[in-house]
Length: 75
Figure 1 (cartoon, helix red, strand yellow):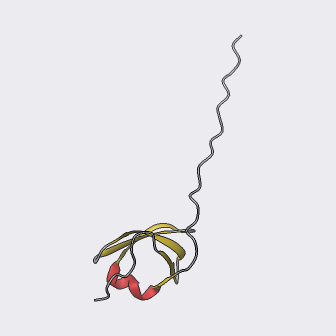
Figure 2 (cartoon, one colour; figure 1 turned 180 degrees about the vertical axis):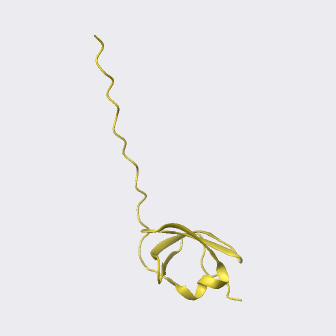
Figure 3 (cartoon, one colour; figure 1 turned 90 degrees about the vertical axis):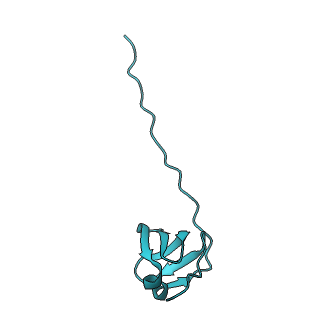
């Protein structure tokens, strides 16, 4: 059984999903939020061979922008 060497916040690269950030990690499960594919959940010992550490800085969280609704003018 492969041991989990990735802690929360670690930057990783997956062969299929690309770059991501570990959001949860235990002996049984690991959850990674990928830049282009969203959050994925894996069985730890099955994915450890597909992951490698990345030296990049975590991406800044994007803040959603909403357009304000304009109220119709009172007559």
